[in-house]
Image (cartoon, rainbow, N blue to C red; front, side, top):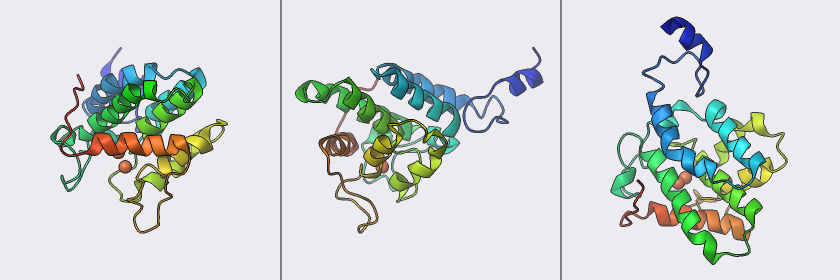
Length: 193
Ligand SMILES: [Fe+2]
Ligand SMILES: [Fe+2]
């Protein structure tokens, strides 16, 4: 198949007209996140996440560092692809903590992993938690969509941008915030690979 035909027949990421070089960060990032996505216990939630990453996650997600200022994240989250590494770190913290929370069944764990995988897709905007609902609006038909959106919207906890962001209230909302908080500490070091 010619390169031109290959381009036309390959629809990954959010821009179908990207050339193969532009798609490299997407493939590299998905290689990092795929094992986490595969570990989501519930099929329908896993399917939601796969569709989100294939179609609705902005291309910048695969390239940006986790912190624009460089102040609030560990060194591993800086530089090209830092946001993907941060996302993976959040999920690894969650997987590590799940045994301490036996009340979270497979459904809760699936919701939490989905929220953590998608919580920062609208960075670098400071109100990124509440922009995800619009970004993933085409997926609103899933019955758990509002729950995942609520988990994402409150992930910043006390850093609520002067009341513009909701704070976590339920146990799983607090857990999502906790995982993001731990993985974002600038003195933490996680083995990602
Ligand atoms: Fe965030
Ligand atoms: Fe985050």
